Image (cartoon, rainbow, N blue to C red):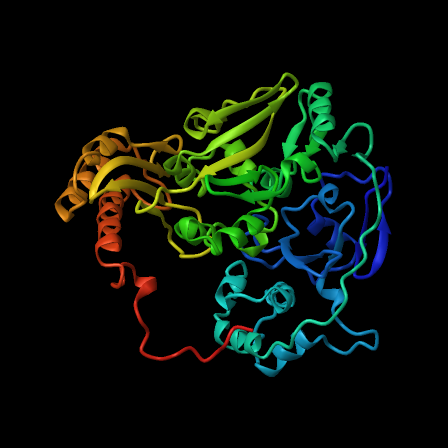
Length: 472
């Protein structure tokens, strides 16, 4: 079956021998749509941003460098070439950029324009909308001015092609899109060497940088049982293939998960969160996976579905080592259950990185402290970026349990944590830096709890002047 999608209002049906693992970026540029640029091929710079448009009018910016043609099947997409009016007049977003003199060298401009096009419909914080786009000419101030002048979005959504196909590509490179869990598990058994693909924001590097072209890919995007989020008194149940964007939307409005939401806002960019998933973060088992420390601290559990039914595993038991997990060769990650912190508990999800937004963690630290009359009755502390896998710190937990959370106790816990972790030197920081950071993050947690009115980080310091822009 041919790969089909709608692009800029026109239906596209690609030749049957088109490799489904080709990136959307490569295909767009080969097709002459060179407004979409390649800057990094890693989803960091945003020069390749295009927009997925849903039938309900919702818009999601994504990185075309990480998205395969197989993942584009059945979607409605818009590239920068699809913004102008039929008579060639610029789109209002482009007009706003021009009026604000927000373009300098122009290389990054198409990607920024597409992020603004999505933002005009999505709204929210302007800085968050731009976190996934790098302007090498440091032109952010006029770009923010352009964002303040954006009109409300009025264009209708693109229509999506109707298709029930579950297999794409030539026989030697099959791309499967199962619609239900039984079909996904059957494909898993029939294709034991197939790659499991969720959002592809990590695995996508194998396509964009390494040019891998596996014999079989099972994409879990359309498996109904792996989608959806529900919230209840006990916590959240998150489909393993549900994008981070949906999880962040839910957590923003839930006080129990405010700290987790703050971390998710820094997990990649809007482009990354539109595709990336909790299931993918667990499946890759990376020691710097941003979502893993908070899942460990909260005592989250993962449901694994296989031919003999489902089994429930604690996240700490699911992670086995560097890039290793307990997923069976015939299983898929189905759901993640995230318990709520108990009333009065302290929960923090911290991340340090060279850049505040859209950067890899140098160290991640998540802490849950349950208390009874100021005495800690249960402590769960998890770190990332400090060893071969994200893990808990049982010695530090034991030090805190049964004690009051004082400054002295926080300092002692920080010292214990620094001794317990096994960090390494790399480009993001030295081992000694990570040990110092671990101590300081425990102390910062104390000050966040003891003085919630005080600024505990540079990003929270008050500014003497109000910003010139107003987010639309």
